[in-house]
Image (cartoon, rainbow, N blue to C red):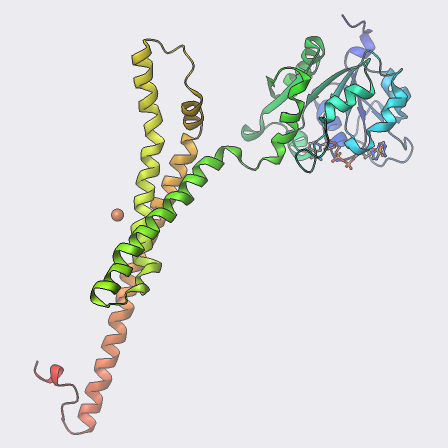
Length: 340
Ligand SMILES: NC(=O)C1=CN([C@@H]2O[C@H](COP(=O)(O)OP(=O)(O)OC[C@H]3O[C@@H](n4cnc5c(N)ncnc54)[C@H](OP(=O)(O)O)[C@@H]3O)[C@@H](O)[C@H]2O)C=CC1
Ligand SMILES: [Fe+3]
């Protein structure tokens, strides 16, 4: 167990007075914690959140006043922490860092930090939140805090803080999961990847199919060029088709899952991985189907407008011909019109 005095209990330390350090400090203060900053420039580190207990001190002094230290510093600057190994011994260090690219370093940032200070308990966490989200508090879309670390006790201490800040904690296991957590912010909308790949693939497939069937076939068979229809009429065939396929792909995994549960006779068994993945992107599949159906509505409204423009052009031409006929003294310029 950690031997913590009453004053250390709710005093938290933050190393680094940058964007994340300030936002985190402000949030912690609002939640009732006391905060102390460790900085290279304690006297001139700018405006800190109002209410910061001890405005800011050097790293050694700050580390001694709390047992939980948030390292809000970029990994490239971690090496100086090695000199603080004695002061940080037995402390819980929260590594919040992210990298700009995947596999930039041979080991995860949190593992590197653990190697620099073997006597401390490193917990990886909070790195999936932005400084903005921290400052404004959890919103529906940004409510989860992922944690991993080798010490269950240290993880619990960080989880308690995260819960108090209003976040939901997801434990991802030991520190070896740190790299996975560090890669999270580098994935742009991961749950949209599969639906978008499917949409692009299906759209390309149906588009090529209708172009071959309607345009190329008509050209080869009757020597008729109807390529002008590609942009609107043919596109308007592709959108509803893909939309319906996506809608069925949205409902199908639910049906398969129901049959699987009936077949197994229990609903307390894990689904196969492929079905799990498919089930998790149902919302996105449905949204893509809705977007394509909306495009179909829009294009269907555009088509009559095109017909109206064509009618206006034809009517204009005919009225000009009629005027010319009158000028030339009722001579018939277009025989097919004169017969009527
Ligand atoms: N900003 C964000 O939204 C998010 C940031 N993170 C992570 O949080 C960490 C901090 O990010 P952020 O606050 O944006 O970065 P900033 O550049 O705003 O701040 C970094 C701080 O680190 C300290 N620092 C800089 N250089 C050194 C050095 N050579 N030695 C010791 N300390 C140094 C400075 O504090 P001082 O001058 O007080 O010493 C500085 O203010 C990063 O690892 C980042 O990946 C994670 C998620 C979101
Ligand atoms: Fe339709």
